[in-house]
Length: 265
Image 1 (spheres, rainbow, N blue to C red):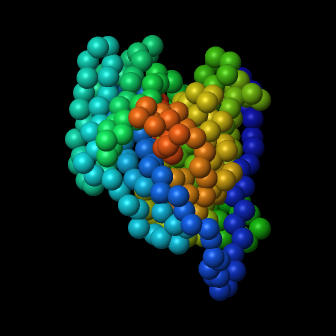
Image 2: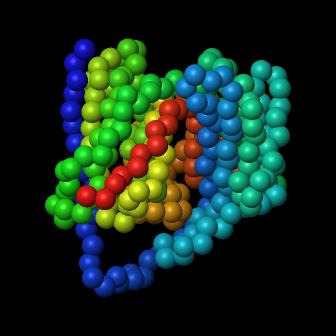
């Protein structure tokens, strides 16, 4: 088995005094961030749907949308989500099987939104260690991630490092092999604080979508849909008015997790 090493650099440039720039008015778009997930080794999992609206660049408040009707259909059965907190809808203990088609449906302010996806399998973390390397400024925290790719050709993965740090990768150059790579948290990353890191299998469409979205929005907090810096269309359709499409994506994933705790140098 080959072992491949690579580095992921997150270059952050800053200035002493922030300057607010006048930006154009933001179109009010509905945002649907939906994920149906199960952990590796399990057969059941959870649907989480976060519904909000876009906001201006400088607005730190996320306008969540309450009182939506959210349902999931699978194998001729329909499950209704409950709104646990404003704008956050959940269905628990769902059977998530391979080759099952999952149909997500939402009704928001009289409009209906739908998407269809099936489960994508993942691999597991081999390890996550704290490294000693930094980037140019010298105040980053290095996390060294090691995983072994599934033997199938054409696997795609999303890594969620927490604090809105997302990264996507494909196995084009490490198919079936073990790979290690470094991710660098910025200087504000809290030390001695357990941080869950997630590894998820995703399909090619979502991989491409996230590549474009991350390049448009960066990793500056608030999530990739928090401000309308990108109006990239996802896989969710507005069946009431096709021209008024929402932002966001519905994915069905298998995932692994690792608790990473960085210590002070």
